[in-house]
Image (tube, rainbow, N blue to C red; front, side, top):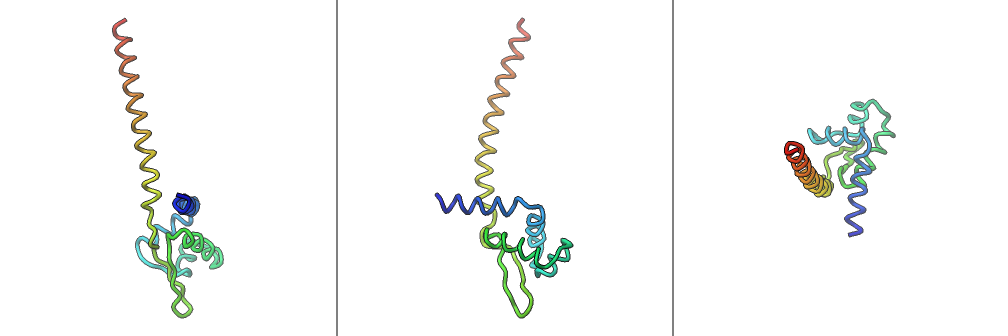
Length: 114
């Protein structure tokens, strides 16, 4: 359970930044070098390396160095765990809204009967 929570925490921490979410979207279309990513997001190589490092630690991105070029691609840990966690809360809220709908309908019926 602790490893699951740590992995989930790492995923959400990585996703908390708009640039990192953008990097994931970009890598979803095609692999890219850190240089290409830095240019796309108009930032320094050092800044992009830090963002890629956070994504890599979360398992969302992998990198491979060939010669002088470090290529990034989507990692083995997609977002299934985070999606499953979110889905549980969606189901909970759906159930609560269904209950609220029933209360509202009951109040409408009482109001009409008066």
